[in-house]
Image 1 (cartoon, one colour):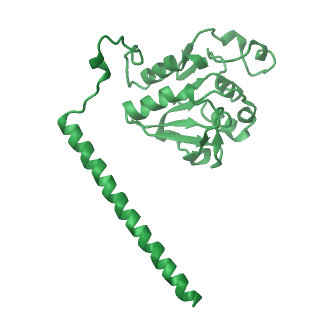
Image 2: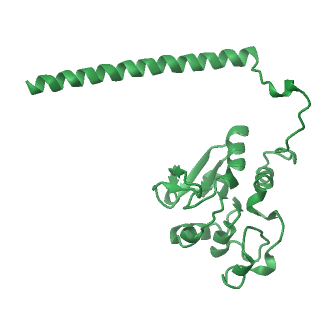
Image 3: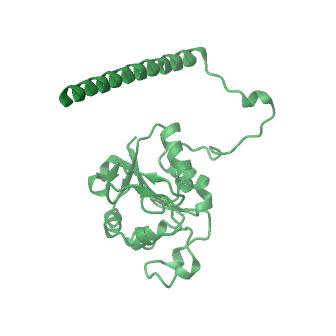
Length: 235
């Protein structure tokens, strides 16, 4: 399938998006581009430094099936990022699955993407009437809301949010995808590779060790050569 893009902006929430992004990448092999307004490092709300892999100007929407917008405690930088809002405005007629969680629907609303659309999110009641782009009559007090290609959710419903997005992308119809089954025996805590899988693991692992040794030896030789050249130049 096509790639997925996840927007990064100051104070973005990791926990709200990783259930979805890890499922896309690890369970379904989907390539994810992490996109920001510029190539500067972006700091998450819990202090993790993240390097965007693309900037908005480099995106070709036709290459993507979904756009993820994580929430943030402090959304002032993102909502006042004209480049970001203009990019979102350009998606009004797109059939891209657009998934926004927590406070991120505010960005969609400012860009006009929630006009006459039902939505939910981590949005204070005080904001209705203060932000003229928020339509109170279309707000739904529920965990996840889907209106066409637009999926919005409350921050604590990150698992339900991930399920809704995966279903919208036709990756799974299993409603219990994230449900934890009860553990009845110690055996269920033991994990084994098949003999073939273990042989493949050993080959990859041992090959990486050999390559690491070669790289280390090469770097040592280069350092020695530079040292000798420096010594000769100093004579």
